[in-house]
Length: 467
Image (cartoon, rainbow, N blue to C red):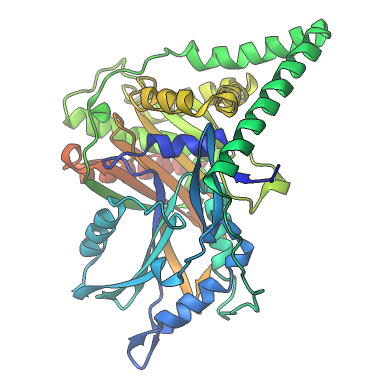
C-alpha cells in the first residue's frame, strides 16, 4: 500500500469549514523597504519569482495540490502543472497609493477563495505606495499551515541578511498522482487498519486498569476545565452571521511596553495581550450599548503543541484554551489579574491537553461524519472571538535585500464569529491584525483605538508601579 501525504483530521476540518463567505486561509500584510525591489524603475518580478522558486524544495507541499479520496481524508499530490507565476504576483496601487488604499486592497484580496486545483498559497507584491515602500499580501490555506508553521515558512522564503541568495535547488520532477480507484482502495485499507489498531489499543488499556484510571482521571480533569467557566458564550454582536466582505484594522505595540506590564503585575506576555484586547472590547461594547458589569466574553486561544523536531513541518499542530475575558470589569489591573488567575488555572489543569484530545478524535471520524461535525461546529455557541498570539523572529527579515518593516497577521472568521484577532511579535514590537465582517464592523476604528489606548493605559500604570 502506497504511503500517501494525507491531511490530518484537523487539517481537513478547515476544508469543511470553508464557504464562499468564510475563506479558511491565514494571511498577513507586510511592509518592506522599496528600493531593492526595483531596477531602472521596474519591479524585479522575475527575480522575486526565481528567489521564491529556489526555496520551494525546502517546503515541498507548496508545490502540491489537493486530491480528494473516497472513504477518507484528501491527500497532497504534486501539481504537475505548477507555475510560480500563479502564486507570486504583482499588483499596483494608483499612485500615490495611501495606506488606507493598501488596506482596502488587502481586504478585497482576502475575500477570494484559494483555487483548490492548485497549491493553496499566494503572494501578492504591491507597488505604488506613496512612501516608496513595497507591500506583500500573503494568503495560505489553514489546511496547509498553522501560525507557527507559517512563521517557519516565512523564515524559509525570507533572509536574515540583506544578501538575497537564489539557492542551487535540485531539479523538481513531479510524481504522478494515484488513480482515483487506487487511492480509494488504499484509503479503505488504511481505515480498516486504523480501526483495528484503535480496537487493539483499547484492549491493551483495559488490561492495565490502574494506569488507565490515572490517565483517564487526568484527562477528565483537563476536559472538565473547558466547561467550568460557562460552556455557552454570551450572545453579543460579535456573533452575528458573517457575510462575504471584510474590514481589517492594524495596530503596532512596542514589545518593551508589554514586558514592563508583565514585570510590574506578573503573568505572561499572552496575559497582557488578552488584557489589552479586553480593554479595547470594553470600549467597543460600551459604545454599542452592550456592556454590563457582569459581561465576560469567551476567547478561543490556539495553543501550539508542535515539538522541536516538528518545526518546519507544515500542517496544523494546535490545541486550544478557552479563556474568560471580563470585559465588564472597568479596572484594567483587576482585568489583568483575573486573566492571570484563570490562565494559570487552565494551564495547571492542562486544558490544552483536553482540547487536543477532543480535536484528535477527528483522526478516527469517517469523512462524512467529519464533514457533518464541521458544519455543526461552524455555528458553535462556545466562544465569542479568536485571539491568537504567534512568536516571530526578533531580528530583521529581508526579501531581495529589502528589510521587512511591519507584519500584520490575519486569522479567518467563522460562520457566526465576525471578529478574529491575530498577534505576532517581530523585531521588538507586537503587530495586531483585527479582521471583521464589513457589515458588522463599520466601527473597526473604535476597537483599534480602544486596544491601543488599553495597552497605553496598562503601560502607564506599570511605569507608575515601578517608579
